[in-house]
Length: 143
Image: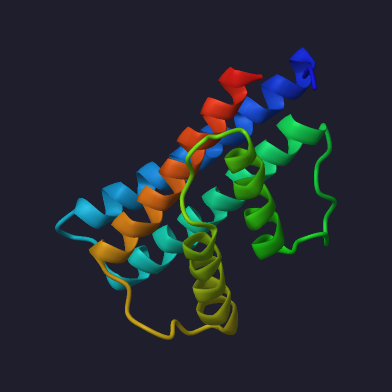
């Protein structure tokens, strides 16, 4: 599928937003004065960043965007990873990405985190998200 200039611009903007979320999580993880609420917010932001990357892939590969309310994140994550793998582009394990999504939903959306988050959690989620972003960028270069 050939993307229009406008669609490519949208995809690029979505990926910039995702990259900013992952970089913010990394910065929070490495700051000496980060507090628990900042870890929670940065983690939430990085999971949102993963959803942005999935959205960008969907838009780039199909030309369509999700509608509000059409949000089955684990299915979309698995579909994105399958699409990348079909193109022989390495990406993070979809099970790990889905687990992070589930962890975020089970904790943050109920108003209380099930476990305390720390720097290692932020490094992990930012790394997974960044790896997925790199995979989608490789996909974009191949099309």
